[in-house]
Image (cartoon, rainbow, N blue to C red; front, side):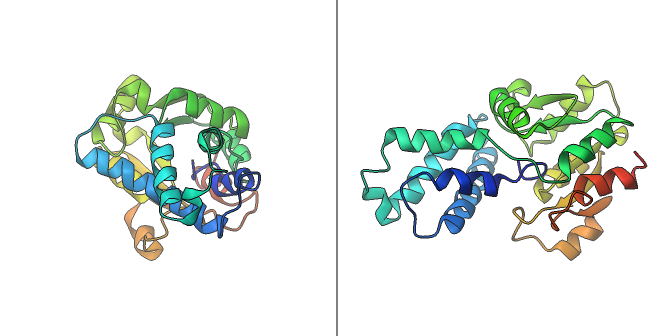
Length: 229
């Protein structure tokens, strides 16, 4: 979510059919930021992985309670649950499907993501992303950025860390992957890592790829070209 899919457009589209918000764009960005704050807090506290639907609902309730909308009966239980489920429906970035198809000509392309297996299946199906398979935090019993989750995925694939490339639009994810010996490729997306210094990230990871121009030749397609896939 974010690396291969444009969650912001998907969520804004879903919000269009819900009770009006003063600034839907800011609300969506705050919802996403609140989600990351929650998963990092849980990881630092040593808490077990949580169903992302539960996390999204908790953050949603907080955001609504902080505004006048929180007192609006239009945002009832059914409406809130429905907008949380909208995170399961994502549209791919223009480069994602083509890029993954090209990468598959040379390497295994696998999802390693936080969340339930059902969430990841729904995202893959709705976005038509052609991955070989997926490994969710629910399946592995661990959550990113715990280095153990990357190592467990590597072991399941019967590979060595240096034979694996972690691709993400999230610097925290790649930093953790790099700590296990994996290669790293950062995909710069307009929706992700607003607080990160992109110039610094260019020097941090093995590959840095621009994926912000909205074309079908940037991002994962450019990465495939770099890897000669």
